[in-house]
Image (tube, rainbow, N blue to C red):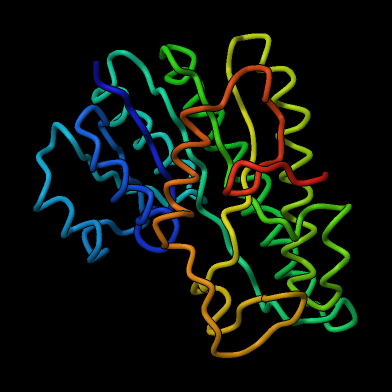
Length: 251
């Protein structure tokens, strides 16, 4: 039986590595979305390796309502049995080392909208397909920086990003409790420290920010951890805050 997955922000980093691993299992049909899939080298390489029955690339700028509607329309044609797994991975981080004194509030609003409001827009659009599926699972990629109980350990790291992720975590905590009544499992996962475009060479390690160090998310352990957690997620675990290794993180 085919199992369907849709991953947003799949052109590189976390998203791309998850897509790559999912395609190793022949039962999986993967929809990978990106702003410009035609220019995403990693996705292009995968599309040449795997047939359309295994991998579909859909153009999706998650900030544009018209593209969201078109992406849902395209996915609906591809998913007559609904969407089993929805992984919201797309996110941004602006100036991760900026203090609150120097924070550009327009950039802060951009982060809040992209990391918190936009996932609502995307998820609402795909909910009819999720409701139609057998698995009915939603997983948001978040950050341990958004943990109120843990996030204070890094007072100078990604201040506005941390606030936006804390808001995202509360969104899942509230919304997930409601969707649970429909049989939909909904949780968040911290994927581990990772060098991304947003960090531009900086990675938080052991409570410090050090230039030039790389804590690679795209390792076998971490990307497989995301997939395993999604597959093992139960209704009883809905609204949990997971680390990539399956352990729990405090809210």
